[in-house]
Amino acid sequence: MSGGGTDTPVACEAAPGGGSKKRDSLGTASSAHLIIKDLGEIHSRLLDHRPVIQGETRYFVKEFEEKRGLREMRVLENLKNMIQETNEHTLPRCRDTMRNNLSQVLQRLQAANESVYRLQQREQERKKIHSDHLIASEKQHMLQWDDFMKEQPNKRAEVDEEHRKAMKRLKEQYAEMEKDLAKFSTF
Image (tube, rainbow, N blue to C red; front, side):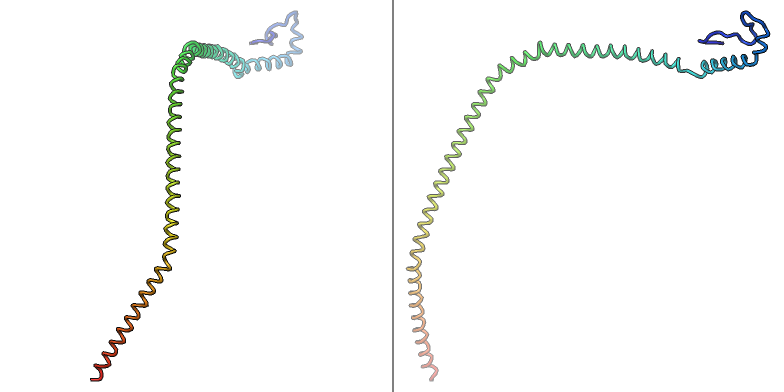
C-alpha cells in the first residue's frame, strides 16, 4: 500500500539478500516503523484531499480563464467594431450635418441678436422719453407749487379780511339784537 513512496518490505515478506535472523532481531522496530508509514499513507489517501482539490482548482481556474479570455476577446472585438463604425460612419455624418446646419443656426442667432438689440434700443428710447416727461412734469409741478405758495399770503389776507368783515357784521347784528331784546325786556 505505498502510493508515491519507495516500496519497503512488509513484515511477512522476505528482505532481499536476506536472512530471517535480521528480520527477527529488527522485526519489532522495523515493523512498527512500517506500520506507521502505512498508516500515514492510508491517512493521506483517505483524509488528505489537498492534491485532489488542488488539481480541481487548477482545472477550474484554467477553464475560467479560457472562457473569460474568450468573452473578453468578444467584448474587445465588439468595442473595436463599434469604434470603427463610429469613426467611419457616424462622425462623418455628424460633421456633415453640423456643417450644413451650423450656418442656419448662425444666421438665426444673428437675427435674434439684431432683434434683441432693436428691442433694447426701443426700451432705452421709451425710458428716456418717460424720464424726460417725468422731469418736465416735475418742473411744471414745482412752478405750480411756487405760484401756489406765492398766492397763499394774498389769499390768506383775503380770507382774513372776509373773516374780519363777517365778524364785524356778526358783532353789529348781535349788538342790534341785544338792543332789540333790551327794548322788549323792558315791557
